[in-house]
Image (cartoon, rainbow, N blue to C red; front, top):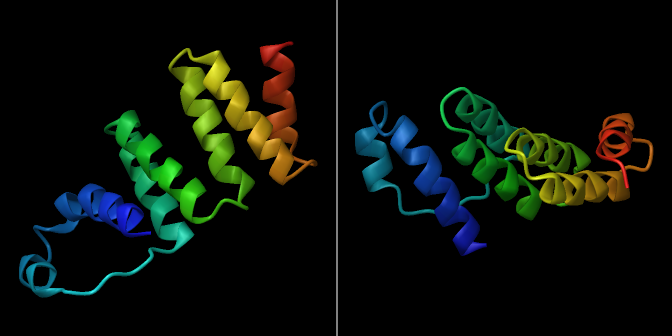
Length: 113
C-alpha cells in the first residue's frame, strides 16, 4: 500500500504542487485516493502523456481490482501502442471481472484467437 501511495503522490503532486505548495509540504499523512480520483487523473494524463495515464489506470487496478473498466482502459491503451498480447490480457481480465462486458467481448473478437 505504501508503494501505491508513493506512486500516486509521485504522479499527482507535480500536477497540483503549484496550487498548494505550503499545505503539501506540511502534510504528513497517507491516504488511499478514491478510484474516481485516480481515473480522473488518468483521463487528464491521456491528453498529455499516455505512459502516465497507463500508470494511473494500473494503480487503479491495484487498488480497486474488482472494477473491470480500468482493465478496459489499459487494454485500449496497449492496443493503441500496438501490443496486442498485453491488450488481450487486460481485456480478458476485464471480462473475468464482468462477463457481460460488451466492450471487452468486442475487442477480444477483433483481436482474434
